[in-house]
Length: 105
Image (cartoon, rainbow, N blue to C red; front, side):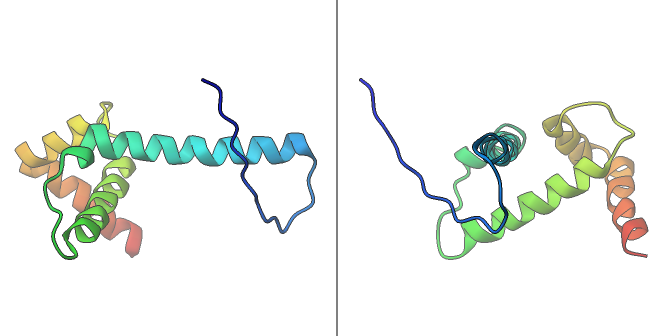
């Protein structure tokens, strides 16, 4: 089955079709990578919190976790392993959290 979808974009810059297509593709690449990390590394799709504001609150916490763990360059593993390591190793967790202090001072 073939389907056709039409999307409309409002731009504030002048561009040709090729430049515009590249910008849209790169935007969706970033979005897809973030959602893959949230699903695989943080198990967002299987999360049970769904009452009141809990989905929004948990999403904020997950994004903070992604940002903190992505700053860590000492451990060459995936996001899920970094998250698990921070849960198992208090020294590693302290290093990840202390990196935040270095960034804000």
